Image 1 (cartoon, one colour):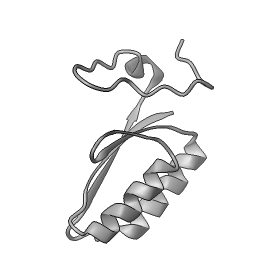
Image 2: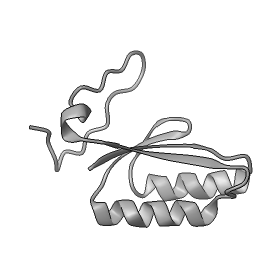
Image 3: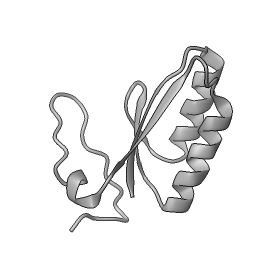
Length: 91
């Protein structure tokens, strides 16, 4: 499944921890946005790791699942490109 993960974390240390965690699961597409093409089990692990690192009173993280049909319709403009995992393809 394809997930877009966005975050707004006020503390530099916590933000770096979340960034390092996300780099293990996906690709950074903007400063605080990652694309992750991961299994359901990997998603649960990622979510649990991130939620254990944030301050629920001052930080926010959003996990957007994107189905295969919708992932094929992603548009972008400007620098960068759509994340692709060469092990998978969208039919």
